[in-house]
Amino acid sequence: MNKVHASLSKIELLAVYFSYVVRYIYPLILVPYYGRVLGSNGYAVVLAGMSLSSTIWLCTDFGFSTIGGRDIVHTENISERDSIFRDQFTARLLLCIPGLIIGGLAASRSEIISGVPGVSFFVVVGGLLNAFNLGWYFTSTGRPRTSVMIEMLGLMLSLTLLFTFIRKPADIDRVFPVIFASNLAQTVLAYWLVRKEHTGFIAPLRAAIDLIKRSATIFIYGGTAVLVLVSSTYILSVLASPSEVSAFGLSERLVSAGLSIMAPASQILAPKIMYLVTRNEARANLLARRTFAIFFFGSVAGVILTTLLSERLVPLLFGREFVHAVPILKIMVLVMPLAVCTRVLSMYFLIPRKLEKLLALSGVTSALVNLAAAIPFAGYWGATGMVLARLLAEGSLLAMLVVGSWRAGLIRDILGTGEGFSWQTRFSRWLE
Image 1 (cartoon, rainbow, N blue to C red):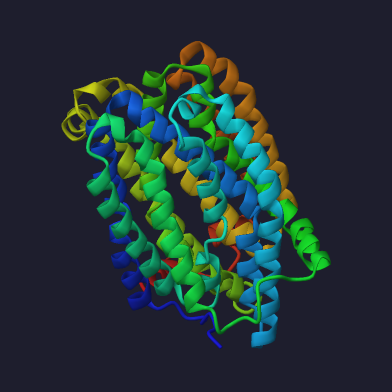
Image 2: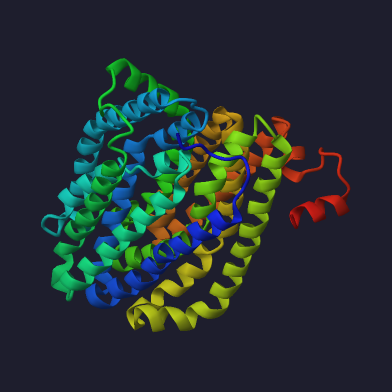
């Protein structure tokens, strides 16, 4: 049985990052292509549809991936893994019912989405399909490279299909069927690879409902906070013009692409830290602090480069039609350092210690702050107002997590001041 190993393989981490290059190049190629081929209004349809699809995905996933990963890293035999797999599949299947209903209603309420024939259907079913992604299963069983390779193949297929079938603004109705076909191919391949590791897909109804109850706290944190953020483009599509939607959406996609650089590290480090917290807490804290330092200083560098170069690069890459997005991007990029802090705190310190209640309270409060600010701000200032609402929400989330960590007695673990080492010793450990 594949297990998560306590030691960190630098070669493994580098291999995953190398594989993820395709994932990061993907939006950098595709966003300019969408902008130039579909135009500002056409790209607004893509952004609004992807925003709604991601929202449905998060609602149907319901925090299951985090709970499943944490459960599997502590399993000792195949039968335990099989039970977790079937519980996960059945619980997601149950939540497809409200996901389908709510998604259909939301798509019909957006004139930008419903105005293009066929888009609503593929946006909704695409979001439901993504919820059955098996990335959590591969990484928690010590196979992150398998997950990454499947995603790389899917992205390459998606690019090939998009470049083949999307050639002019009138092809906007083909975008989401192509994306759906690519995601379907990835899902089929993933389930085929694990076909011998489980005895079926359906678990007892009681077990699936119990998983939904156990995942509720994680969803309240990750689902509500992230849900409001990923649905921001959809909300803006109801309140503002396509031009405002494209300006905000372009900025949000670029910042999200920058933050996604954290994903490969999370694929490997999150299961390792969950494993180490109960066995070698000092080692787990050291890995978490290293991760924070690297990504925080990287995010600061991203803010500086975006401020200096966006006025030249945005028109060059996306066309003069997107010049109006530059001021929005310069504000939106400030989200990156805040998001790095909140993600490291939650993923590497709080979740491994099962402090879901703190995450839930912080997530709900942040989501309410975002919604309370987003609707009036976006209605009055458009894309700028939506960005300001997101900054306010991200800042409030970070403040609550820091205060909560202090009350939980984790500040010393986070800063490394309670381990009895001199500053010279700590520095030498960072160079290990």
